[in-house]
Length: 303
Ligand SMILES: NC(=O)c1ccc[n+]([C@@H]2O[C@H](COP(=O)([O-])OP(=O)(O)OC[C@H]3O[C@@H](n4cnc5c(N)ncnc54)[C@H](OP(=O)(O)O)[C@@H]3O)[C@@H](O)[C@H]2O)c1
Image (cartoon, rainbow, N blue to C red; front, side, top):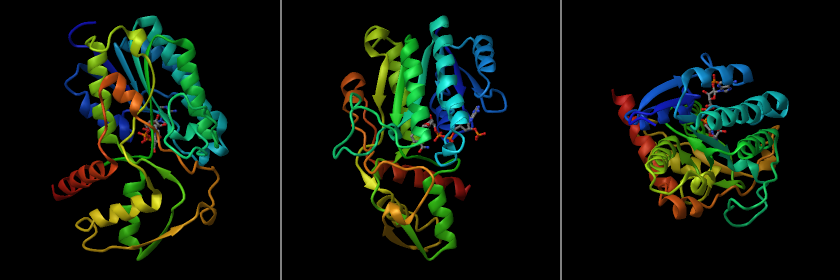
C-alpha cells in the first residue's frame, strides 16, 4: 500500500458515514459513495464500483437501518445488510484491501443480565438484527482483512437519530412518554468514527501484528448504560440552551405501552473489553459523548 491509501467510504451520507469522512479526511485519498452513486441492493453494482475504485480500505457505513420497516421488508434488509457486505468482503479479499463494517447490539435477544461479549450467542428478535447478523457471518465466511464493529444506539449531530428527535419533540411538546425498560449504551457517531480511525491506523501500521491476529469482530460502544428514558432526561438536562430554556417532562413507560412492529432487546449493553485488550482503545462514557455532540450542535446553530 502506498503512503496515501485509497479509502472508499460507502454510506457517506449517513450519520456514521459523515463522521468517517471527517475522521479519515487526512488519512489518504477519500472516495465517498452515497446511495445515489452506489446502490447496495444491486450486488453487481457493488462489485463493479469496488473494482473501479480499487480501494486499500473500504469503510462500510451503509445499511438498511429502518428497524421497524424491516419487519415488512426483510428481503430488502437482507440485500443491503447481508448480501452486499458479503460481496464487499469477497472484493476486499481479492484486492488485499481492509474491510471495516458496522453491526449492531440488536443481534442479541437482551436476556442476559450483564454486558454482552463477542462470544455470546446471538439471537436477534427482529428482521433488522437477523439481517445484520447474516452480514457479519457473510464477511466472516469470506475472511481476509476485516474489522466488524458492533455498536449501539448511534446518534450524532447529523441525520435522523434519537437525540435530534428528542430536540424536535422538546420544542413541540410539554411532556413525553419514553420507554424505560430497554437498556443500552448511546454511542456518538463522533466517538465511533474517531475510534475507527485509531484502530485502522494502528492495524495498518503493523502495531497489532499480522492481519490474521487482529481481523475479527469487536464490540465498540461508548461506556456506561442507560434506558431510553434516562437518555432523554439527560438530553433535556443538557439541552436548555438549544430549547430556549424549555424542559419537557419525561415520563417513563414500559415497552408494552409503546407498541412498535419490531421487538427490541431489554438489555443490549455490550462489553468493550476485547477492543481495549486488542487495540488499547476505549470510547468515552456516553454522558461526555453527549456533551460533545450537544456542544457541536450549539456551535453549529450559532454560526
Ligand atoms: N443507528 C443506530 O442506532 C445503529 C445502532 C447499531 C448499529 N448501527 C450500524 O451502524 C452503521 C451506520 O449506521 P448509521 O446510524 O450511520 O445509519 P444511517 O444514518 O441510517 O445511514 C445509513 C446510510 O446507508 C444508506 N443506505 C441505505 N440503503 C442503501 C442502499 N441500498 N444503497 C446504498 N446506501 C444505502 C442510507 O442512505 P439513505 O439516507 O439514502 O437511506 C444512509 O445514508 C450501520 O451498519 C448500522 O447498522 C447503527
